[in-house]
Length: 543
Image (cartoon, rainbow, N blue to C red; front, side, top):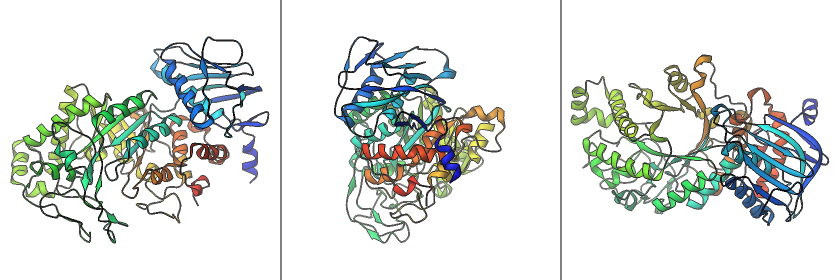
C-alpha cells in the first residue's frame, strides 16, 4: 500500500489545480504548468493546412459525440485558440512525434508529421474532463511524445462471427483513441467468407452463410439451428478503409490459405483436392441442415479439407488478390498459413506428384511452395505478405513478414533470419482468453489478466540485440469463436487494450503496473463516457 501511495505522486500521475493529468498510453515526457485552459463554444480551432484538418475534425467529432458541441475553425488568435500544425519532417526515426503546450491562453499541437499531429489530438481528448459540460477545463501542461514501436496493431476476426460495418468503424476508433496504427481484418474462415469478390459471386452467395452454430465449447452441447450470414460489400470496405486512413490507421486484410478454407471450398469445390467428397463433420458436433457435398463449417477447430495447390486454385487466389489489392492500399496482405493439416495432401495423387515434380522434401515443403508462389505474385504487384509463424516450416518465403503467435520462438527464428516480425504470442496478447480465473461468460479458455498484458515486452529474451530491429512491434488478436456480438467483443477488449497501447507506445523503463492502475481510474471513467462494455474485474489485477 505504501508503494501505491508513493506512486500517487509520481511524475505522470500529475495534478494541476484540482484536475489530474492521466494519459494512456503514458507520454515520454509530460510537465505540468500553472493554470488551466477552458474550452467553451467560443473557442476557435486553427488548422495550419488541409492535412491538419483530419486531426482537428477528429477532435471536433469527439467533442460533439461526447459533450454535445462543436468548435468553429478560424484564424489563429493569441487567446482562446487551439492550433494544429505540422513540421512535415522527413526524418523517419521520429515518425509520430508531437509536442503539445497547454497554457491558460491557448493550446498548441505541433506534429513532426501528420501522424504526430493526430496523436496530439488523441492526447488532447484525454485531457478533457469526463463529466459532460459546455465548459471544459484542461490542465496546463507541456508534452513531448513519440511511439516506441512502429507497428501497433489490433486484429478482429470477422470470419467466425460477422461483425457489422458500423461496429468495425467503432473498433477502428478504439484503435485510434489508443494511438495505435494497424487494423488487421481477418476476413475468411472455415465458418464464413466475408469479403465480396465480384469474379466469384458464390463466395458470398454460399460461403458467407452457415446453417447453424454449435452451442457452448467445441464440440458443443447442441446447435442453435439458426442461419448465420454476413459479408462486407466492396463499397463498405472502401468506406471503412478511408475511415481508417483518416485516422492514420492502415487496414491489413487477411485471406486465409491454404487451411481454414472450408467456406471458399463450399462455394467452389474444385478448390479441394477431393471435390466430390462431402465436408467432414467434427466428432461430437450436432449438425443442422444439409450435410451432403461441401458445406460451411458450423463448429470451430481445424479441418482437413484445405486448398489443393492446383493451377485452378492459384488462378482463383490471384483473381481474388487482384480485387483485394484494389480495395486495400496496404503494403501488406496477410495470407494466413496457420493450422493447415496435410492429411489430404498426403493421400492426394496430384499433390504427391507435385512434390516429386518440384523436388520438394515433403508436405511441409509443399506448403512453402504454395506460400512462396502467392508471395511472388503479390511482390510482382508491389505488395508484401504477412503469414503466421507456420510459414517458417518447410522454408520461409523470401520477403515474408512473420506474425509469431505460437509463443515467441517463431519471431526469434524469423528475426535471426533477418525477416521482419510482429509479435502476437497467445500467452500475452490473445484477447479471446479469459480476463479472470472465474470468468462469468463463455470464452475459449486460457487466462490473460490485465497485468500480464501490461508487463509484456515485444523484444523476446534470447534474441540477439543486433536483430531486435526486425521486431516491428506487436498486436493483440481478437478471435471470435465465442463472441457472437459487438458487446462481447468490447467486453473482451477493455481494459486490456489500454494496457497494450502502453506496451507499444511508452518507453519500457517508464512502465509500472501499480502506477498504471492509478491512471486507469480515469480511463475507467472514459469507458463510461464512451458507453463501451468493459470488464470491471479487468480494471483490477485480474482477480
